[in-house]
Length: 525
Image 1 (cartoon, one colour):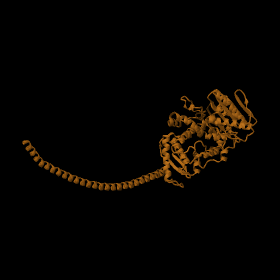
Image 2 (cartoon, one colour):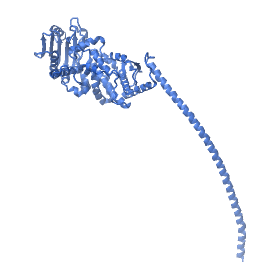
Image 3 (cartoon, helix red, strand yellow):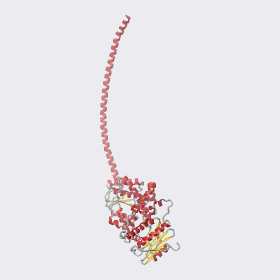
Image 4 (cartoon, helix red, strand yellow):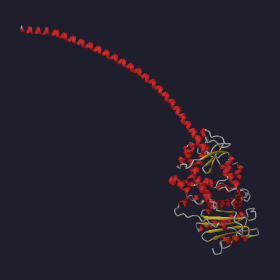
């Protein structure tokens, strides 16, 4: 009974509690629903506000980007205009003002010119010490400038040079050596030429937008670097009575620019087959008028200088090449035999430095005083050999021997005349006037020094053979001296002296020969 009553009480009590809990649940659910509804609405509004703000910021950002692009374009235009004006101002300043009768440089040309100058300095690893002056001009002025370059004699000395070359046997009597030299050099002239004193002349008809003209300008800028850093032009002019030493220095300078040219063409995407010759390129007729001696002699620096400079470059790159220009070889023998230059104990060649103010015979001084060098002697002997062979083959009218130096050092060195000249260690020749010097009849006194007795002996016999063919005579051999004293108004003596020296006398008469011997080989010597 009690159990039943207790159970009923529990059931009766549970009903209102359950109802209470049910009501509480309903209230919580309703509250949560209302809270969720409120939160979602708020979030939706915030998202909408954010979207609107984002769109506004995006529009504002686009506007700012557009303004920035406009400002950037304006700034770029201002920079380009500033650079253009700076180039024009620099060109005006460096050129010394407006150029009379010369066209204006275009903006593109000024930009290309600056790029070429900077690339040249970078490749050659030498900065410009002074600003260069670029001047537009015509071919006539460029050729006039070329005619005044070191290595080309003045018009006043032209006749004396031709007479001396003829008397030595380098050329035939009718040859105007200066004129033929200029023909040759003009044929090599490109769009630009370095005239010295930091000035580069550029042909006004040329355009440095072309590959050949860009290369030509780069080469002349490289030449100006040689002059600014190592005094190239002044050094060339120092050799007043030694064309051989002058030619050796030219060979280093030309070899340097040849090495540079290869690197410039690679870095500026210019084909290596591009030539730098301008419209002055010689005709076939002009080329055939150039005697082989002149051709080979003046092309020597450009043909074999790079072989010498490549040896230097292999040692310590541009540092060694710079040293080669600052301390140049003293003879073409060192260009032909680079080991002679690189020796620490190498001796200077014998210069026969006779007092130039005391060279008169009677009252007449020499019309020419110079050094033949190994190259000059080799060309003379090779030329004689070639002409003699042509005569023996019944073709005496063929006067120009084939190319030698342009075919490389090995081809040149294997010629008999080159072998006979290879032991050279110094020489000097003096030419005195004999009447008008017609037919190469001026007086010649020539002394040479040789490294060994064998070298002296080889040259001795080679020069005798050369003189006999050229003078069309037969020399008599008597105790180490070959002589000719015939009825043809010529006295010739080729003699071995002490200390591996050879002396050549090729004069108009024996009386003059004796005067020369009294001055240069007195009995007490």
